[in-house]
Image (cartoon, rainbow, N blue to C red; front, side, top):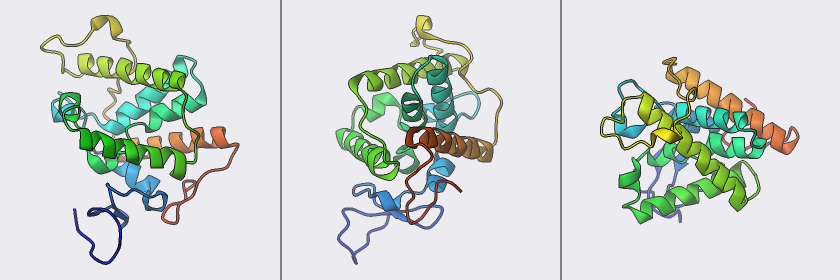
Length: 207
């Protein structure tokens, strides 16, 4: 992370793949790029890299959205499922026992997600029921992933919560995950906005 003494932004910045200066402590909508985000989460590994095979945050998001669709949840909830971990493109994926120990990290992650959802993508605030549905999908897919990816040797997974068919065993390339996630996000966003979408100065989501 680099410090920038020539502006008033809070904290230092991360330089992204496309050359954007992203300030994790001071996120702004024009600093996001869907290309950067999908690239990063397609390479960020789940479970602290302890899975038997490589498995990315991007794959998790794709499976969460698929699960939400199969459960009959709205396109809005599917969009939440496809995007809820996108801040990890900037702040990395921390296993829950670690993440829960760092309140500043959690607040930073939540702030990034709020700006992403409401200012960059331009979606409304979710209801309590929609957040509950998102958490149900996230936890259901998490349990399945842990069980099927060899992260349940100490039997911490609640077997009754495992739902088959929501772990990607195809071993896709990072690029395939990146492209699939970007296409899905744009498709769902177009459904929510009737064909319209937010466009930052750095990235046109329709590309």
